[in-house]
Length: 476
Image (cartoon, rainbow, N blue to C red; front, side, top):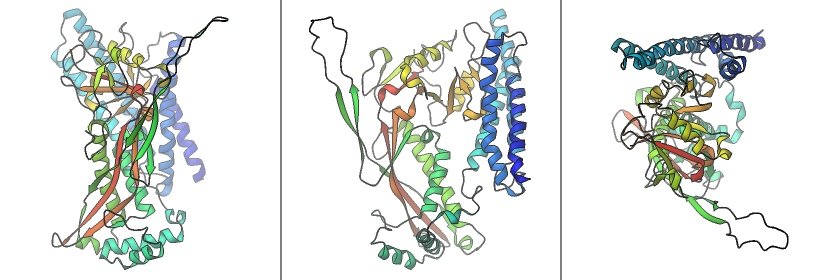
């Protein structure tokens, strides 16, 4: 019987997705436009049900909102609320735009209504994203996980547990001697086991949305080096018995990314360490992963490269028409700290097409949640269709001009000169480098009655293809 539960959920999701997709669609829309508007939205909502059904099946009894996994019904209800809120938002915003066109201003109560629904949409998206983020936390549907590890890895897990709870490092030292000291870290402390390493990394990925977009490489050495082509070879047409012109050769450049050390220090009371029911490893993995995700998330976008990753937007900028390798090509909105008053969405269309066609397959948008709130109100030049549409399967940032919107609150918000929106194929543009191994040092001396756990790892990042993304600057 249990094996049929996910299929039933998917069937419910399919019909629900079709219903949601048709919300707010004009009854007189041409068939071709109708299919274009509905099919991507319905398929996105349907695909979103897949992981949800899997989480629901992993939860105890296949049903409810317990600690093992968020319930399917809650996700379904939130998606339905999001669809209804979007319908209400479009009606209110259409009325606001009509008032602007007719009277030159919109009544305050109408503006307030649009802002209120916009806030609700943001909250619903954030709530859905948070539920799925929690499903990535330690212990979410991981029953029987120990069977996946070797006997040596399980032995290390037991020894690490004794060290974390009681400070007993003899077992870890024994394992180091057996493994010829490969269990220690040059920065000090002991390397966490495979299971905790994976859990910390999984939580960090959930906290740092940009990590999921970039190209991630794991190394064991001091740095990551890559040869990139900054200029291709020349070519052309030539007639019979004519000499070709002397062409230029390809130009290559070596890019080196050095992982830098970052740390997280969760504290635990000694009373909790003595509680045998307390899942210490899961709690530490959760806290360390969240901290690492928050630290690296900001650096991947804005870091200056000094003892940290160099951010996607931290390189020299240049007007896109004058773009050259090593710089970020930007377009300007024409207004300091804002979009243009008339046809504000036009610059987004221009930005999308400023990216070479070869990079658009897999390209997506990147912006802060507050910026998305503004973009959500924009229509095309005809005033008939919204540029943004909800699509839970694409990360709950929806789709803008057909491309996925990734919400990352480490992105700059609307302010003068800010690079508030990026569009590109970020997997080809940016590389994150993880140095293998996470170390932990236990400290029960610094503060009486409390034990500090110092986790450290090495992470770096930098742009490896400046041609694969563009940015929008809020500047006149």
